[in-house]
Structure formats: structure tokens, C-alpha cells
Image (cartoon, rainbow, N blue to C red):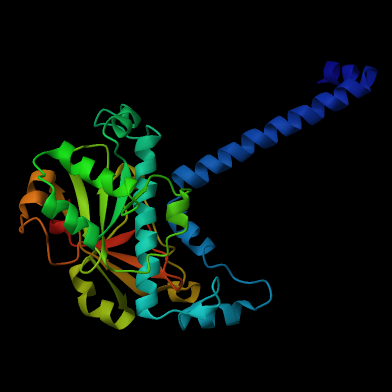
Length: 308
């Protein structure tokens, strides 16, 4: 230290610039470390992201903020939403969750049982996968009634034909303009969530897959469901995800409404053949909503023997 101090006194200007440079480097490294902790290790990451979507305005008190939150007010949009309006908001948010999951496949963040990274991006490109398809039912019926669908190539080729003729949409990234500009105002559509496999996908029927529950309706079925904090249901949601236990979530505008979701996991043969036993009637997952219709990605409620 004596030698370093003497050197700094002998050359004050270079020492000053060196010190500033070292300080900047330390700040950058510290910032990256904090970011890693926040994004990868915090069990409250998804909760914090949801809270950001309905922030407290600067011109109101915390008391007013919490009181109107408990009453179901959406501060972001400055209004109370009906259950019907929330349905459309929640369906867009649910689609955003699918896109979020897909991004892990595009970014090669999927690992196998040996913790080895898989080249999933190659599969996404190869099978034109890792996408979410939104298909109006009129066009969907025309496609599958008129075309001779015999294998997976015909199936996906038929969907791509609809997209080319602007009769269906394909969402890959959250930044896609067609996703951002779509308000999901209709219920007359289906969603197909396709990952890297060319054979399997999840199927959501806009008419019957999803419904909005208020707190009273949720309380009637609550005892049948378990809150899922952890588990390898999808690589995007592997980390532990929790809700702070020392707060009233209604005061933060969450938990006044819930999205009940029923979906089918099918292969193409089953789908084309209209296999009924793969299309469950009971909700598979229940997501918490904020007052603006955004879903909490995780944790969510589920019936253990129905999830796959």
C-alpha cells in the first residue's frame, strides 16, 4: 500500500483515471451480479414483474392506491374492467406466457436430465416451431374440412397457408407487431402452442378453454387445487417462484380475479381424428390475475393428476 500510495502521489493524473476506470468496472460487475440474482435466483421475479404492470401513480397516496386495488381498479388503464373485458386481456397475457416459454427454446436454454444444454433453436428452425398460432375458427374449419390432412407435414402446411393468406396469425416473439397490435377481441379462435416437437402441441379453444373467476367463485373450488411454486413443468418456469407472504395481495391489485384454463395436449393424429379423451373438461391450471387482466406466470394453482 505504501508503494501504491507513493506511485499515486508521483503520478496523480494517471492514478486518478485508473481509479475512475476501476470504479466503473466494479459498478458494471456489481450491476451484472445484481441482475443475475434478480433474474435467475429471486423467487419473487414473476411477482415483481406483475406488480410493474399496474404501478402506483405518483399523485396518489399509498392508502388510496391499496383501497382502489382491493375494489378491482386498474391504475394503468384508469378503469374498472368487467369479467368479459378481463377475459380478452387475460387471453393475450396467456399467449404472452406461451411466447415467453418459447423464447427459452430459441435461446438454447433447455437442458436435459444430465444438465446438458440442448440445441433447441435448431429444432425450432427445422420444424418451423416454437410458435403460437391464433386461428379463427371459420378459417380453421375450412382448412380441416376441405384439405386431406394425413400427416404432420400436411397439417402444418395447411396452417402456414392460412397465415400466408392473412387468415391466421403466428406469434414468435413478444416484440412481434401482430401480437402487440392484437387485442384478442373475439372468442371465435383457437390457440395452438407448438414447441420444438413437430408432433405434439397444446390446443386451446377460445370458446371453452378459459374463464374468469372472481374471488367468490374461486373460493368454491379452491380446496381442489394446489399452488405450484416449483417443478419442471417447463424449462422457462423451473425456478422457485413465490408470492410474498407478508402482504395482502388484493391491496396490490392481484387475486381479485383468476383465469381458469383448460387445454389439451395432442399429437396431430389425435387432433385430426377428433380424439375426445385427450380434451379434458376440467380446468388444468388456475392463474392469478391483476386488475388489468395480466396473469401471474408462476406460481399458479393446479390439480396434480391433471397436469402434463
